[in-house]
Length: 412
Image 1 (cartoon, rainbow, N blue to C red):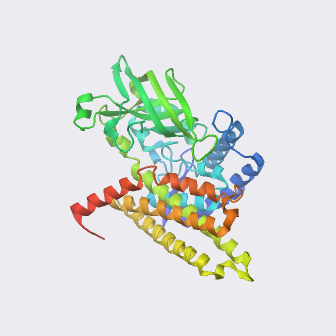
Image 2 (cartoon, rainbow, N blue to C red):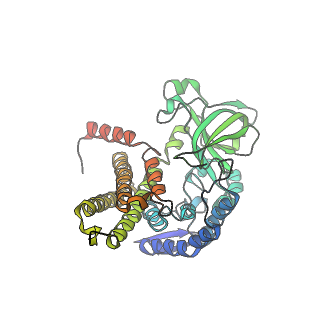
Image 3 (cartoon, one colour):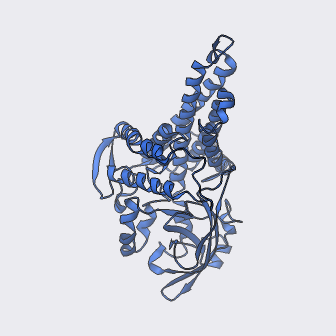
């Protein structure tokens, strides 16, 4: 099977997906791991304000730009915005390879492929071409990034609780409101956000939302705080406030009042990404556990010979295989154009929950060592536990599955 890999200048090369994933692994060894070593050992990536340290941000930028030069960074973006135009199977396999190779240790590599919410995306096809052409070069080269702001303090899964509004003004719109859980918002140059522009349509749940691309340094835009989680000193999630922010018409995404369709258009990509991430981290953690169980001895024999150790690892291997097989099947069917809300929900819920269990087993196998920063297993567990909520919680996924079961029954 052949696929196209695009570079920042729009060049496209034909390459098989197996070769693609091997190339990604080579890039990690050549470009990511040395940069991690150059950062040196430190207790936290974060500064006193909760944001990434300047040297960490610079290393992230270097990885993105090196990846763009190698043709990997925008390979999943549409060809119309200078990307490689690769499909869902490439997306799934690429992210699985990145997280399997980097694990939670070499976290610089987690930015080597442009996530649709951080770099060039299909949403840019819906804005003024002149504005898009101004944005694209720095986004495609990894010099600048974006964020996606949909959730609010009282509006997460229930979008109809959104309170952010935008009102018509001469030549544009005036935006007011607050967004929360916006990944990369403390560091982004641009922000994709959504606001209520038609109150009547919104009240009857007939859309009424409009999408905007916001200059994150425009007057009235403020990242009020960085949301620190799991006991860390900082993070990459932020709370954004908009106070009378003027947004020119050229930065509207699509047609006013039709924003919900655009907001949901990246959902499948986000869920496929998180499923690939899950199988990658689970495989990485299982590999660590197996290697340790072979060399760690108690009572005169390797602990892998104890069923209390080996059987949970066998269970993790079975579940990992099931998740990967489900993911590949779903991605290939998405590439054929099938509508798979049920299957994507199954894949996302099963894969992320599987990864939490697999990493937890790996921690247990290592005993007290499993909790240390040195092994990064706790960081992997935290990532996956959070992902059971991100891009649609496990409960929302099950709601979608039950809805499909009630309307169509059990189908294969």
